[in-house]
Amino acid sequence: MDKICCLSYLLYQIDNDEVKDIAIQLLNGDLSFRDIKKFKNLKTHITAAEVKVKKVDTHKVAQFVEKFMIMA
Image 1: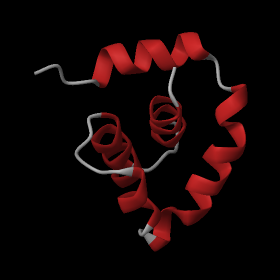
Image 2 (image 1 turned 180 degrees about the vertical axis):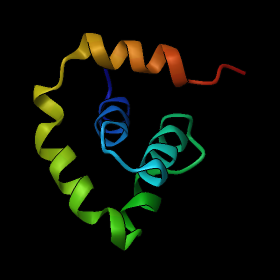
Image 3 (image 1 turned 45 degrees about the vertical axis):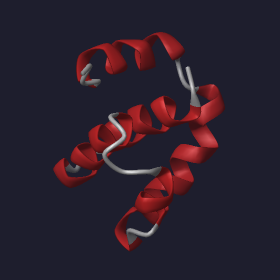
Image 4 (image 1 turned 90 degrees about the vertical axis):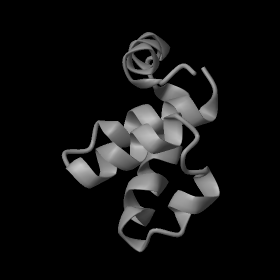
């Protein structure tokens, strides 16, 4: 899994509907990683996700991607 998919998955795990929506937008390319780093309310979440990204369960990330990625 690539870094964006993993970060999207980790952000989606946060119990906040706005963050979950942003995670799905990041996954689908509607927002870039650079864009979401500009959101002040996400800085803590992004930093925590970046630390966990290498330890994430890729099987769970794959399931998340299958569920939420929009295929054109």
